[in-house]
Image: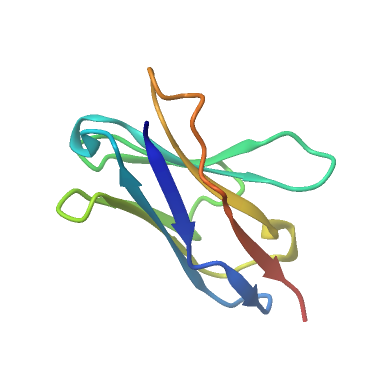
Length: 115
């Protein structure tokens, strides 16, 4: 039932920026924690950042100080501002929420970081 549509990915150079967005539908968005995950070939999907219903963020150590997660309840979206991108940030990025919807994922958006 829930649907998540990620967008905003693309190609950036090291040190560059991208802003990802996730549009959520099919749920009462405002009452759920949201998060961003990423996955690269050969690795498990990992948490990048999370945000509470009250817009309290937390971040994985490897993006701390560079990425900003923010939710926009009026639009049912959650964004991820990605600054000072590094090659290791290249991945497919997904948004995600909590129970009972842990099994639902969008198509992801591809981020490439290279010179």
